[in-house]
Amino acid sequence: MASRITAIQSGISGLDDLLHGGFVAGRMYLVHGKPGTGKSLLGMHFLEAGLENDETVLFIHGEESQAEILANGAEVDIDITGAEFLDLGPDSDFFTEDDTYDLVHPSDIEQERYSQDIHDAIREIDPTRVVVDPITQLRYVEANDYQFRKRLLSFMRFLKQREITVVVTATPSSDQKYDTEIRSLSDGIVEVTRGTGGRRIKVAKHRARGQMEGDHGMEIRDTGIDVFPDLVPEQCERSFDPRRVQSGIPELDDLLGGGFERETVAFISGPTGAGKTTTGTQFLAQAADDGIRSTVYLFEENIETFVHRSKSIGIPIDELREEGILSVTEVEPLTHSSEEFAHMVERDVDERGTELVMIDGIDGYTMSIQGEERSLVRKLHALTRLLKNRGITVLVTNEIPEITGISTATSTNLSYVADSIMFVSYVELNGNLRKVVGVLKKRTGGFEHTLREFEIRSDGIHVGEPLSGLHGILQGNPQMGTTGETVRNE
Image (cartoon, rainbow, N blue to C red; front, top):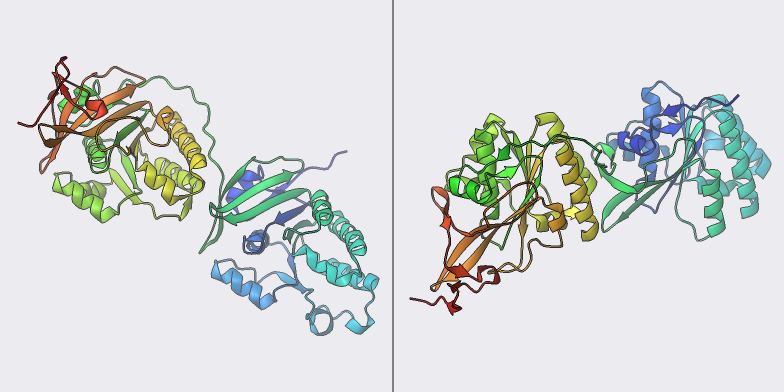
């Protein structure tokens, strides 16, 4: 009769999600990574979860003392003072001075006897969870690599026969055969890395339960390790919502065919200083008037500047925040993975009932979020799909390099993400620098195929009537009529 598979918590909820419910009781798991990637902390979380469940847990260690381990845990709010400790370090006095496990004097030790004494100690402690950090410390008790590998297999079988769940840590070895053997022996493999893209975690193997594929976000904060699984947009059949998100400026809404359709992704593109953020903020203000909760994530300016600029044209951001109808979040550079940011947005949607999300600055997003730009664009696409499937409307501001003219609708080939693209651009007319606004794309509705003059004044945004008698504006070379006569300074 097959034994029942029981899942137990790893102590890190996001890791349990990657493991499809947690570790399997009575199995062995390898946590693999270079120094400083969080292997020991992951093991400490595992033991702390056991202590919180009134289990007996054992930490077998050799590179750090018990005092150092407890101090390191306290720095990130992990408390395993209730654990049993077995120190196998080369300078350890475990076998000579420990009050509880005074087993044998080192001078009398033979390799076989040494391993047997470890087994005896584990039998006496009788833990349900064991961490061996690192597993390579068992080399200290063996004469050569062959004997080490043989003893390791015997030791792990002994632990599993006692239905002890084991987490062992190891760093990459130059001995490929050793790495292959330890990985093969393990029922599950958790890989942790740290690089220019931040901390990452991946479950490379998980017997019996499987795992969430790919690598995922990971951070070490004041409360220990957080794991942020990649969000996978669920398939969702939703009926089309004919309502629109409007700006409250009649001419601008007319240009958009009544506004942006709900549950879509709308880009507001343009060069620096053209008014992209201000235009997006106008939609947020009107949404507040319409009773729609919204959130803006700032990647390229701080909250104080954003509030001041908005207030200067009559948009009372502070009042809207106090009412709770609008939330403003400043995203600190290089402190979040794309997965953590996605979870941040998802939590806001769930907790606040947000219906409109504005991401202010794609360039800021790709510079502020940890990771390679191409990958970040894919992650952003996944996030916007998830939001759309949940009935959320998304506004994205996007800077394009041209000061005048529009040679590309969006930066970094992002146009496929957008359901709608509105642009604000500069043009030179009669020697004066002016702005125009237009719509390049709307998948879900009609729009004006014209340009309108666009101004930002002290009393807000002003949009004029459709411009006529001009062509070549999108090339940055406005011309009058059909004769090709260039508009000149008066």
